Image (tube, rainbow, N blue to C red; front, side, top):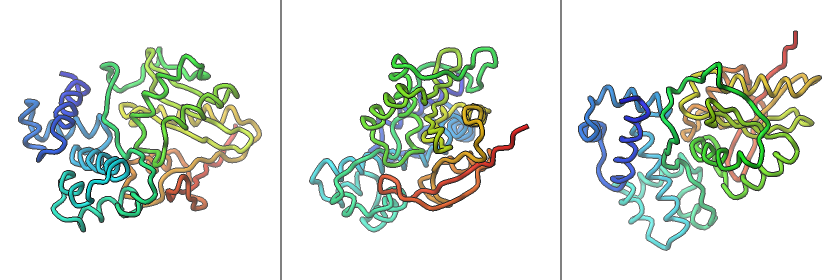
Length: 277
């Protein structure tokens, strides 16, 4: 079985058993692999350890119940696997930046982690022959939104309907770009050239270890002639909700700038000096 096939089977079992006790050892026995092998494959494929994925999924479902139901917080905490409301509150606030009671009063649910659904079985390495970065078209919207659901962990507060509406505006303005590998979307980017800004950059989890993000940033630089820097926003340093997005941008040379609040969430602008030959 390929790493993706193993991961699909693992996630299927996790989602079916999300409200039950789940350990690496038990899940490994269920899918028929050693704990060591499953941990390595899952972490490389999804971009986070299995226990982190489970915690994020449970907190996402808890956030949904907090906002969309009147269930007592304590009941929601127990269902999410926490033995006390205090421990649940600490874990919830670390990820959502507000305690559960305040999050309920705010009345706006957004997912921290959606279930992973993969369209095809790929190796996770872009094919140099089949990879292309293209202007996004209206016909790409469904593929775009499927990938958004896979990378939503990098965009706290993102609302799918609002994002789809925004995407249509960027497509009309020829400022939305989609990278495909053998027909499958692996990278997304929205640009504001007049502001020297990347407004959205998402990379398929299978391709975060490759050059997809670097290729998108290079394309952004090419499309912004005469600019000295390019910027984007991401998680602040040491944010527990960050699964590695800030580290990825730092590896590309982005450096921290001003602190921001976006969609009620604390973020930070980062900038990259443009060196032209």
